[in-house]
Image 1 (cartoon, rainbow, N blue to C red):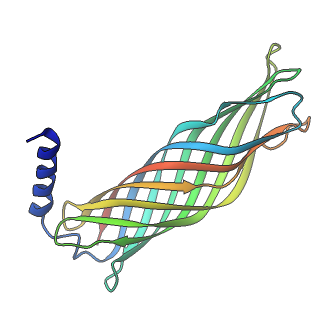
Image 2 (cartoon, rainbow, N blue to C red):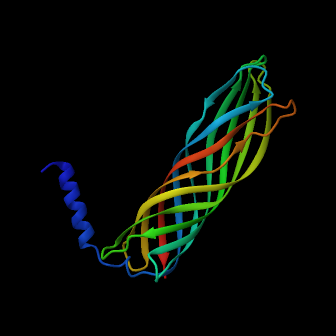
Image 3 (cartoon, helix red, strand yellow):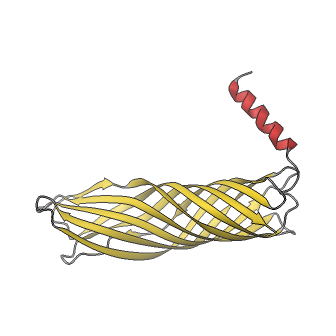
Length: 223
């Protein structure tokens, strides 16, 4: 028996040996959620550049976290939740080929208020797979340093863009007690537009889409 087959057999044994707790739990729950993601800005453009627009960094690893308040409905295999989270440190770097040559470093962060609707496959185990969608609000804030290459002169500014966010997600909820569960999920989310705003010279850059492939790890308490 190969190692992969052994792992599959072990997983099935754990699944069927688990107590039937998640299928019976309905009502409200609270939770903490960690977000780890591979994020990317797409369809970039520049305004007021003197030379060639060069992208130094358009994808990055991003982390964040927040909380959720949800409700697991008794009459339907559905749960709904409100999620509030903040993700930080997307390093978005571009360059104006000049002259003069200008380097821009944008620390992009996003605050999100999301409404999730999730369809659950309820079953006699403590593992409940689910699939669903996300829609809500994303506030994308850019903190930009503009450096004149050579002289080292630096200007800084910040800019905020508010967007409609949407996404799809799938995962599994593991009820390890009658009240507590751990959730592991994948989500693709489109966080809308991002922009550096314009500096005094009328120069700046934008992206029509800030998207992310999220890994979500949550601890939930139901009562």
